[in-house]
Length: 435
Image 1: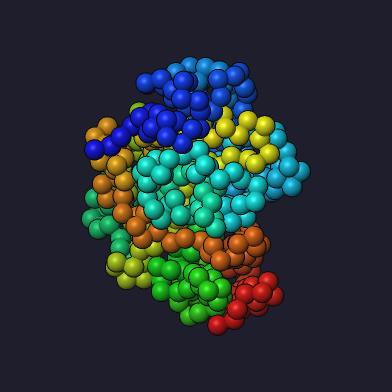
Image 2: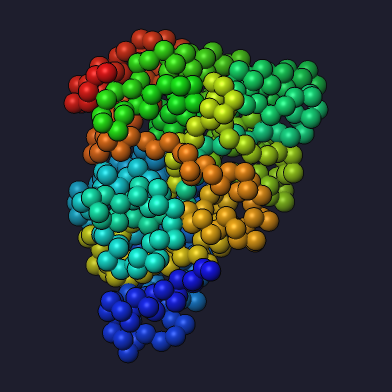
């Protein structure tokens, strides 16, 4: 049923002339050029992502396109710092980076600097992706990035500890609080003073925007900005959940959470010192590693809500974009297309976990066996909450004001009602509409 990428690219070569017909031989991979070239790919650092990138680049050079040398450099771990770095490259029209790893909300900010990769990929190839995910990388009809992996926030929980204390998997935030407190008290009474009930991403950075948006929507609040640009932060539901989460800090949530990014939360979880964790799919494979203290002692479910069934997950994940300033756009595009083809995505997910961006991958026997959570989390991409694309080029400023306000609430320096009222006015000053 599924046609391999190689076949699709051969068809593309023969039908739309991306390469001379004479150079297209059966079984070949399109490399963009038959000349020796070097391209640079800036890829991630979180939880073994860089090692996976190196392995894939090595495979591309050895097995697919020996004439293309791929250099892999690391982006900052923080998404917020990555934006600042990318802005420097783009504003200087630098050709230093050819292929960028781009977050799912970057396209609107960087659209003018990225190549329309649909000029090099066939419609059949693009049709393999979840439409909603591909649409996130499509701006004004231009495909400025190819989805590489996706995700939504997940609730990791210790199956052994829920069984030990006779607790059910929480479906509401209040149930989570009660279970987290019960388990923490019990584990500390047995001598583990380092044990905490719940960890998440609480630092003032993009990761907190993702967490807070999940809290807000799952409690019946707004979505920061509506699709029409109306401000949705200063409402009773949002205020209630932010104050509730803040009350957990230093109780069964560590005070250090105010500085936690993904890997900080995972470090506590991975050491066996947390009952629950909010994180992305990548943490599953690492938690299930041979030497993991919590191997076979945890599972994953959708995040809680105000009521059962009100779960929300922020749409996350990263894609691959090709710089307009690259001196080897065709080779860079060929590499991005190869990376996001079915076979390479199987290899990537076996190394990294994460949530696939192609529906067919959720039925891949090898992946399902290695990542059993896919069976229960595949539909996350059907209901995931996108960050406000209506913010466009102002998204980074909107997010910074949002996560700063929420971090202040978590720190106890301001109550949620005051913080959200001030945030509403700050967003109005940016030109967005008051409710």
